[in-house]
Length: 155
Image (cartoon, rainbow, N blue to C red; front, side, top):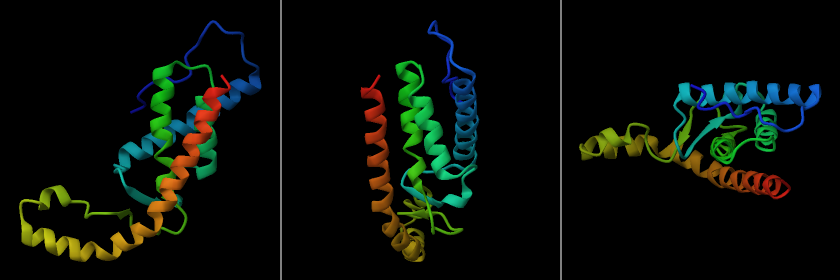
């Protein structure tokens, strides 16, 4: 469910039709990304293959940057920033299996130590693969945040 309408109308001068088209396209892309994240239950510290995204990764990043640089209120901008930081969780070469540090059902297993140990041992290969992408994701998030902060400073 789309949590907000980020392109609120304001009493600022009218935008050109090109700007309106860019914002409309950005909104469509962002809505698709948010819908995917919500329906696929993306978890924190999870890495997925970029092929699972509804649009090319760079196009999604640009849509968020366009929206963030638009005339929007602070709370909406903050929500967009949080959502944008999920984009680096999608990387080339991850493959069909989503990567996580811990087994997906970890919370359900904590009360059953023998099942928990078994699940962790079975998850070891996925966890090793996750470790390869962890630094890349963190670096991309940091770079994206710098770009967003630079946009905000120019406003």
